[in-house]
Amino acid sequence: MGTKSTYLQSLGTLQLLAVIAVVIGHFWVKDNTFINSLCVSFCFVYSGFFTAMRHPFGKDYGLKEHTGFMLDKLARLYPLHVLAVALCILTSMATGLSDGVSFKVILGHLTLLSPWIPIAGFYFGANPVAWFICDLFFLYLMAPLVVRLLKKIPVAWQVVLIVALLVAEYHLGYSADIKENLGTGVIGAYYLYEFPPTRLLDFAAGIILYHVTLTSWWSKLKSRLTGRAATLIELLGIVAFLALYHVGATRIHTHCFRAFCASAPAVMALLGSFLLTSERGGIVSKALSIKPLAQLSTINSEIYLLQFCGYFALLPLCNQLGITGNTAVHLPIVLTALCIASWLIHYHYSVPLSRVLRPRH
Image (cartoon, rainbow, N blue to C red; front, side):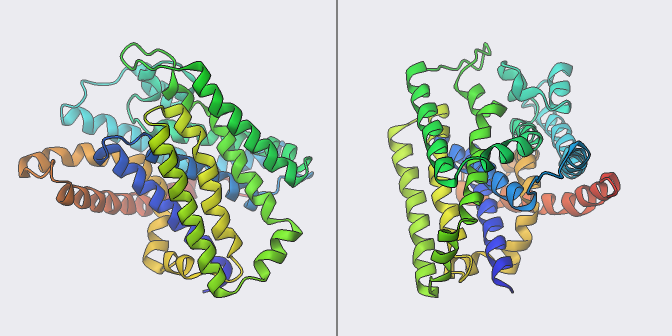
């Protein structure tokens, strides 16, 4: 296995762990605000990094190329998004957890506009995590503009800019003292948390991180690392990530918007450490790139979007068996079933359908 494929697969596994952490946070962690915020931010930063890496958006990139780019993303993710919304509605109604969802909410999801509507029933209705995919399509749409704008700024100033914006947004959350009333749909922290332009900061952080890896000093630094030094840096990246998580979890408490603002630096520290060791590949990245984990990371999108469907579908059985309150038993059963269902849907629905819908280049 080549070094490049090793570190790419290790990053995919990190995203898989982030997705699983979000699932655990939604259903088995009482105070889940910061862990979910941290791991969701990871997915957006990760998306920004890989979008910039795979698509340079050069001068010859025009409307035709971007149309093909967007259609390719739609072919891959939109059918899964529609299926997840439908399954979530059906399973929640079948288990009595919901009496139904209004046509307006469904239309909001199908048009990818639900995160733009400042009413709680829209952006958390039907499939509560569908806002993520709606945000992602907006970010893909804006990617050429963001990449080109950032390329005009020296890399050092890009880093200063993203830090300044994150600090400003973090303090904005404090000064605004935003409150959320999900019952009445008042605009608040949760709306800003999933609002697409807000997530543009995470996406831009990933793009800036990619630009940092292109600098000459970065290349020189990583080429001089030994295997032991690479392992040490990876471990330090994980420690920094967990330390920033601890600070955020203890000081920010339950304020969702402020937790989101504090997440990107932790994510950049973790991703940056693994990118720095890509020439050598430390023990951690090699462990994360083993074949079973690498294969499982291909269904990250399915696991994320289908998490509520899987939980709702298994809830009656788990209640009947009396294991719902027993996390040690309940969690592995639901996660295993979710992974199996996601795997089947990926290879028998998402992949075949995307091949049919993907535009021919």
